[in-house]
Length: 282
Image (cartoon, rainbow, N blue to C red):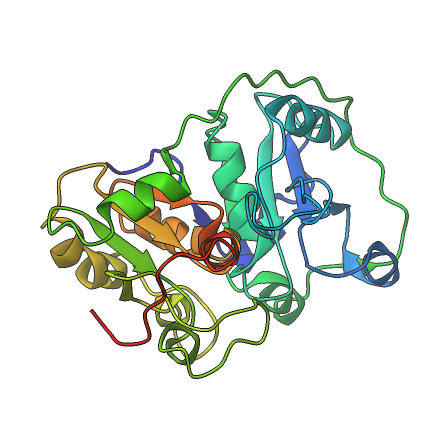
């Protein structure tokens, strides 16, 4: 079902509204805070993917590299950023929106926030249209007050993935690049390969040669035929650690299609639990 509020915003459109009172601009770049303090979009507040968008455990076999934080902790993060239920949140990162910006979008959508968008093309796109950049210490425009009680968008855990991965009535989509999927390389996790039964649709194919998302019609053409073969709720999307998978969920939402389940633990959890490993395509 199509959103009433587009998941993406172009840099030129953001430039027109960035002084709006209800706008909260968030930098979710996967960089140290000190790097953000040296250079960020004007008025952008920093959110840390490792400490605020995740609750990383000592044992990565329990939830993977970026498990979701406790919902109360996330509520506190939103309040600290000055986000309220009526805030128009625009989030960006340094990877064309393909990393933590999409994760923050998913998390906000999953607590029922309607007015949240990812900056298409990220920091680079904003810089190209002349968006102001500075190194100021940013302060929220308003004090935040946000009460979230549970995640509303569908989630899958490792047990569910294991149970349905080879079921012809279910689909597991791995959005990592093809070399990692085929087990030819693994730069981050301990074991190379993929979840048996999964198919590979790299998140990079959601974007054009300029690092911008494909049009809604193009994205619909890309995903609709595959998704419509399966009942709603029978599609699970994952990546390495549950962050960049949200880029594909964002693309599917931009296409006006129903958002599938997210397996947050993803390959980082699966590969640490002595599960069956595959290195050939489905």
